[in-house]
Image (cartoon, rainbow, N blue to C red; front, top):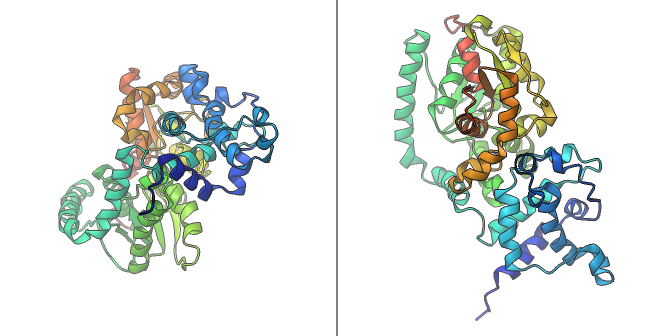
Length: 429
């Protein structure tokens, strides 16, 4: 009988599988420990704890990578800081890579050498997932998404019944008994992929109705918890459900709801994962679609319908990682009378603290809310009455820090804001 490998041996094997040129650079001596990333991390800004600064967290992983791959370790181990991996190290990695990092990428933007610290910590996440040390709830959520497709017939009738109820609400809202929330329509222009919950379906359905859009609703949710685990097998499997659905329905585009990581995965990662498959459609965020509708006049909006001051939170995945900065600001310019920028904003905006899957892990709520303090301070400084976020995880986190820090603001999604501002045109283009 083959001897069972220890957790450390399994972790070493997984780390070796994930070793690449880019990881070699990120884990090398390129980081000169200048400390310029430290004040850029919302965890450090909130806690002033140097042990959870980007360089300190990454160094826990770098030392092990150097122990395996840095040839200088054989001559000057004391100089490279290389060390042998232990199970205690893996437990520390859970704290460094999951609990104390939202993968927001702000440290990279502010590093003069461009050291990819999140890549180092994401590698640690992947290793921890492979050896069964990742947060259990993230694994369960990823597996549940896969199970939904495998047992689609079981979920289908209940889902369609829910959509019929939402359709009745839409008809009342727009005053048209013919208004529809289509599901499974072949040949539609858009496949709209929501999240679980009416708040990601209803505003979009209302906007599509007024734009006279040809669209159909996905049977699946956009969320991909496999990416938080850095588990390529689960991540690809979850994304593939939507790709197959889009191909089956022969749509022209996949439109991702207001979800930062879902957009980043579908827009940037999926084409690399499935490069051998034909891509007969493009992927866009609903942010881009709403901006297009307003700019081309497919929907008419009235600023006075949102009579309160508004600030905007740049989601890390939509903004810093995907470059969607101008689209939300053009929408806001059209839909509100009083828009107030946070400082800093755009690519230098602070993470809200809820990214990286952390909003799904209740036992880490304490550090998550503490890490959200820089964002709370940003919001308070604007004096705005409402904060808009075009990412559901961000909205969840902002809602919690709103209550925790007594901000007394209204937390909204962009689609909700646009739907409020629409001047009805009876669903005609």
